[in-house]
Image (tube, rainbow, N blue to C red; front, side, top):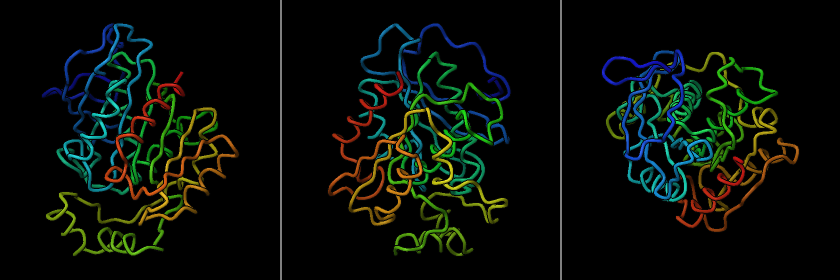
Length: 287
């Protein structure tokens, strides 16, 4: 990435990694390959060592209507930051980022920019942890950069060393639960997008996907050998348990599956104890 105006970092070329990871929090605006400005934040690990090359950065991909400054995202970052540096960002159309949400399609470019920034800051090991929509994005992103990926554009600086997908759908256009029927109304209807913009502070793109991106279940087989963890609650009101089971099955035994008893959906339902386990898994799996 190269430095841009007003403190922006663009995705055109990667600067040499820093020799020492920053010891204080940072805020930056990142530029994606398709020209969208993304707000991002870096928090150093509270137990960080001087061995930057061996240190881990976890990039957190929030759910739909989230953002890096939302309290539930800050809580996630706080728990994961006990043993790793954490990069949070707001997907396009969310928070202080530009553009409009495409609900899981072009968001892979946003994650690309955040992962590249983590590597520029000196981290040789980077794991992605995504929730709900973000969970689908980390799967597609890992597939694009996996050895078997068909969409890979040679951006090796955006590859990940471990992937955690929490509360993600297995397939697109799912309407089998009342919350998902409400979400489809929000995304597809003009009145719904007005509610999204002014009620949920989320700006939603008005056009349909064209082409339709690879689904999470289509992406999972392309992720190996990158370690993959799938986490889902047995009380998830959005996506029932057939979704994580389909994802795990599609991995051909490569993915590890955690079904969490009593857990609901995404960041709000992820207890600190679970987040700590996810952080420990990411640190071990990323090598």
